[in-house]
Image (cartoon, rainbow, N blue to C red):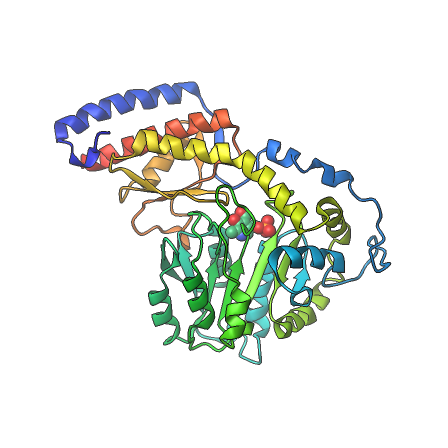
Length: 421
Ligand code: PLP
């Protein structure tokens, strides 16, 4: 494969002409494809259709009528299901509504309005900062931006965020109040946190007494290739005497139906009591019929694991298209590097510095919408303009193949143009 970074200007000019021709061909095809968000395809959603007709009874195992108000923290059968799946005691969790992001936003606003453990509410402080391992999930960063929390970009390594950097910051600065973590198959790089990273996050010394880890395990059961095991953050935090440090989030959005799944928050007993106190003012209870449907459909944790294998079979060909096309078109060109996730929903790529926005623009003008360049960083500002998130789940395999071929042409064209500057 031609290494573009070692080419002469003449060679680059020649390649540019060929690429422009290829690109014009794609523009002529008038493609209309959306790879901007991590949404499941309808074929993937079809795998779950039986959940819609699974409600055999609305009376729960303790005799509660699930059609009526009540049971703030969720049905015991739903807690049992997730307890078995995630190895978290039922007493340590609250089953929420249809969205874990909603639970995260609420957790953050509670800290802002009321504080925790008798510490001052964050809204009364001059400055509140949050650590944002990046590239990361744009909606996490949007919550910070919405509340005026200053975001600190933390580099990601192959085994999770840069722990030396994090430890050096949090031990000195009491205005750093927490960190966002997607510990398994992270969005967007598919990185899995090593045991050491989990251990260090749970045990590190923080100047802020009310430092909180927002542990968003959105892809905790989304294995596509080999299953990666994640160290138990609660066990590590308890062992270090920091059991109030962790808020754990999970949902079935990417297991059954996004926007119509079941979400949960888990934490220490005292944090759960604190959350329930405020939540009882906010709502009389969440959707118990959906909890019941979910339990009836899956029966137990093994039911979810079996379902996730089917989902992995559905997603694997799509990940294969992305990875094989990148390998075929760009390996050795010096223009792109990428991650090879074992699970999750995304593949992240890094272009030459200064080429991500241009690549996304070229793809858009040829009819393929990607996640906006920069979206994976705080303030939508990728300092090197390199990172692009590829979300392969929504298009069909045929559409995805075409979109990836076009994407590679865009990467090369943007790269060659950059090298010619
Ligand atoms: N967390 C992460 C890391 C995600 O990627 C997503 C969706 O893409 C969510 C949370 C949203 O979850 P929910 O649908 O439960 O609000």
